[in-house]
Image (cartoon, rainbow, N blue to C red; front, side, top):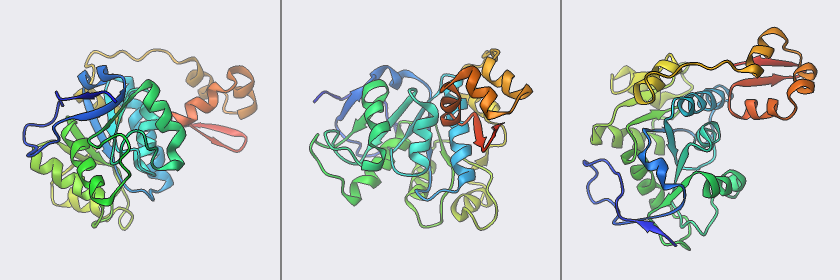
Length: 254
């Protein structure tokens, strides 16, 4: 399997891997990169916000980096696809976790997958901690979408602080994301309140919003049947990108 030795990692990352195996598009390493990480058991709110944030970053030419795990990670990849990099704690000949096999295979084909481990290496607990370090060290900024105090996502937050990488969190209610609320309260992270402004810090500053026929139609007519009759399965693509939500017979812009 192909590998790279020029790793594009933060200079403060001590004892980095000597090489990274890869599948996919290496050109993504040249893009501005933001990591989005968080809980495997995230709330519906966090899922929608992660999809929306990742989609916005993609719109501004920012590549989203995450770890392909269940929960926040996979929603980050889905929202940014194909402008996304997945870092794995297993060899790339193994598909893990199996629940995410479809999007992982899509990433292999159209995005970029990276691993520090031999192609046939099975997933082991300690390798996920190393995976987290690589994910952070690849990135220009790190967003922790949702996390409890004692979680792998908080280890990523600590790594970002250690590496001197800007750290951000999403707004969360008290009691629902104790880790990110603590990062905010201790002023170790900044809060994201405007996705477009945040994306512009790392992406194309002179981006001009293009007219979106689908979104303009939904603003005037939120009936699902009418939307689907006009645009077909594209409506589901917009839902997957986190742009809209389908609530029964209505379509809602997020």
